[in-house]
Length: 265
Image 1 (cartoon, helix red, strand yellow):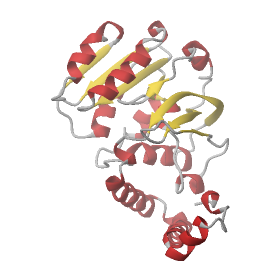
Image 2 (tube, rainbow, N blue to C red; image 1 turned 180 degrees about the horizontal axis):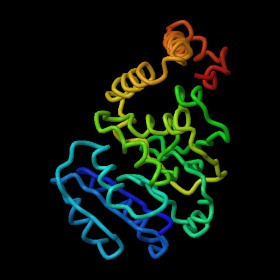
Image 3 (cartoon, helix red, strand yellow; image 1 turned 30 degrees about the vertical axis):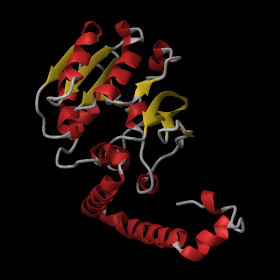
Image 4 (tube, rainbow, N blue to C red; image 1 turned 135 degrees about the vertical axis):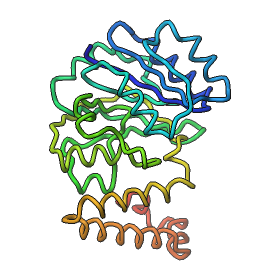
């Protein structure tokens, strides 16, 4: 089996239905499909049962969080590569999954671009990933797990996702995989998945958790690069203060700073 697609869910029946519909509409003979539900109390299980004939394995039981659920999926997977399409996100309906699978050419990590839905009004943005990624990239950005294939043996070698993390576990894995394990990787131009920015990591109240986990991970595992990280963090904070200043907002409103929206982070 070349590919296992894994979906995790907890009390997100509407998003889960969207996800399952998009994946089971593909040629499911070309991949293994696994659904891990965290013991949802809404009607998520009923929705899973509606699509059960196209799901190779599913379970609904309490878990210890996002990465515990994702690790459960890994342990049940048989594919050479893993792809996580979690509850709410989709594989686009015009996707030829056979063509996508043909890009799985042996590299440890293979990532595509991704379509982002930014708000309830459906504002769209295509995130274009770079061909080259390094530590500098990871302190500012992350690979989208919804469009990134991972060799199963490599994440097992890594020791699975860090279950002590609430939001940063997949980000930490990609950073460590490239910067420490020096795994091979490849960027494929084009996108086949859509990420809806209403998940846990996109919620404003969870941003502080994300940045705290990032900060702790860098300090503990990348002491050599810590000065670079601290400089970036300081510059980002100063830029945020600048953007929030009343005088600059007024100038922007008056049209004197048209470049401001695209000033880099």
